[in-house]
Amino acid sequence: MKKTFAAVMAFGFLASPAMAHEVWIERDAAGPARIYLGEPADVVPEAGDPEFPNLKAPKLFQADPAKPAQLVRRANHIEAAVAGSGDVRLTDDNVFAPWEGEGGKWEGVVYYARAGREEPKSLLDLEIVPVGANADSFVVNWLGKPLPGAKVTVVNADRWQKSFTATPQGGIAVPITTPGRYLLSVSHNVEGDRALGGKTVAKTIHVSTLTFVAK
Image 1 (tube, helix red, strand yellow):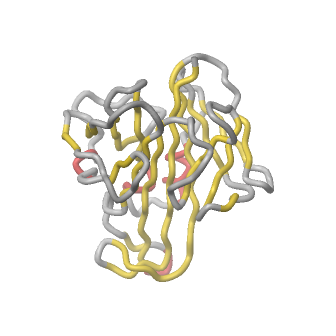
Image 2 (cartoon, helix red, strand yellow):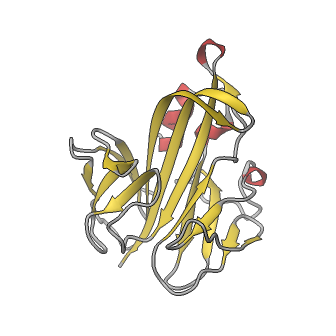
């Protein structure tokens, strides 16, 4: 029986719906960006994932994080009008409230997402970055540096999925098996107190996605 990246995470962290969901962006050419909350390997319901109301105000931007795009709420996603073509990114640390984890310690989640693979650079804390424009090889970066051994799950246009382990240099090569939209996802846990969602959490789970369209 196959397991999605989200399901594998949920197995270990059943205390919160946060661990069964991801945030991702879809964009076609120079069209608007569509932001989703759900399980990427599943079809998004017409009325949205049951947890969609928790996606309230993601910060989506193009080149400058200080200039977020305006958002419009749709039935099952949030839409952002962005000018021209190019990669778009977002961050959101306010999707799910912190929850009590192992040993009674508080845990929280921060989401990142990117659509497009034109720019071989990272602007997010956790980001899957192409090694070159429109490349099929990527590097997982944490705070701008490669993350060795990161576990990356790939979902292709046919919803086929497979997990890969990044090299010691944080690299992965994605097999392009069919035309259409691909989604890559990765998580990284950080121990240490920080303020999140009005609480001091002892563990922060960072989750990042990348989507791109293969021709």
